[in-house]
Image 1: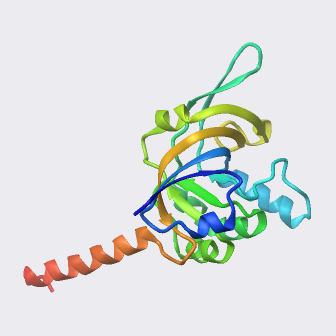
Image 2: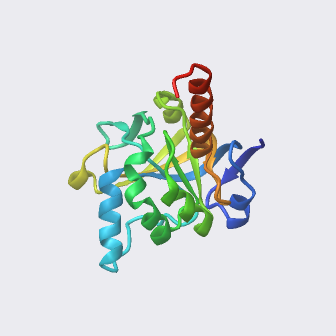
Image 3: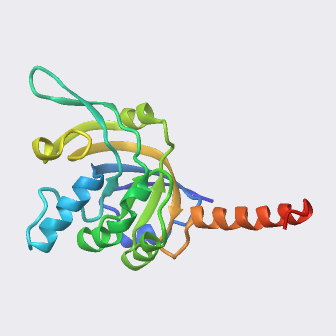
Length: 202
């Protein structure tokens, strides 16, 4: 297990060096995107239209942040806890192929479709600690922009953040076909079967 500090945009070479269980900190631009933002982005892609922000080489954060706006119109982050990423599994593969981010950030892991596309497109999934919304907010040093706020609302729109040493993230899916959550689940199933045998349950 290694510890890596990367600055976005991240190169394919840098991503390929990461392995599951590595600890990762990222600096640069990340963009929040949950269910509705993924769907709208893919609709625009299918229509041949471009997004208001370029996601290539940067981080996409599964997050519905709590934001506060000052009287002068400036935004600050109150809390930025990760969203359960499994909700995005049904379209994350197409999203990564369309927009080429290098890192997906969330909690709870993702499935086989995302694992496959991460290997194909040189992307990783970084797991952020659930419940650490203030830690995440403290690593966001600037709110650079926001898109689709009126249409999708605060938690679902695209927030564009500048971050410094955002993490720690655990590389849970690397670009070599490995999925830490799937491996752990497999070991648990094996152990449960053995325990059941010892208890004469099966």
